[in-house]
Image 1: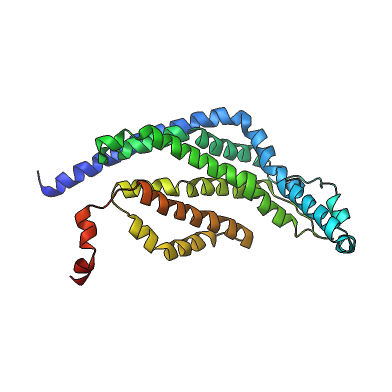
Image 2: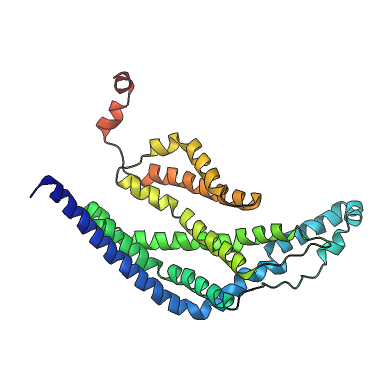
Length: 288
């Protein structure tokens, strides 16, 4: 058998293995979608709650206004903060313009929720795909990998929904004025939300990815620490694909923070360089 054929066969075997893992993942997501279908209306209600203006930001704003009223009563009256503090939440609803639009939106929510429910299967299949390249000791880390990866993605998604999403919607509603009212389209609103849920879930996976690459010897602590400026630049570029300044900021900051966490995780738990390699990087190695 020629050398080219010997190279092609392992490549085809990898493709077959990848197809097998992808089929299992798709089946798991479909099953998860079935479980999530009945939860989709509740999830839709949860993500649309910020458009009423009643969020954790409302409580913070009331506390700030109360402090201003106690310390600076003149400014409190001048800017009519009492009126703003006691303003009733507005009745806002999503709108749709196509006959089957709500149905397709429900499908999208169910798919994303089903994917999140299937995350343990997704990460387990990913582990099985990369397992042949791991040592026997590293293969025993499958349960921690699946658990930590699933929890990290869910924490990232919840962090976005609970902390970041109300900020984005509140910023959007701040542009309302006399003659200018918000009229959110259902598909645009949900698509924007679901895209950011996935993005924040993946952002929180960055430390685990870097730790894995370190265990494979692909990246080192020195490499990550030396390229912080490029990580900040990359975070800015990723954030720049979003239209408004607030969304850019709330994506860039967590993304770079996850990079910093990755640097320290690799330092503590990454693959250590052999003593000979470290010695070779000294003055003698530099001179050569």
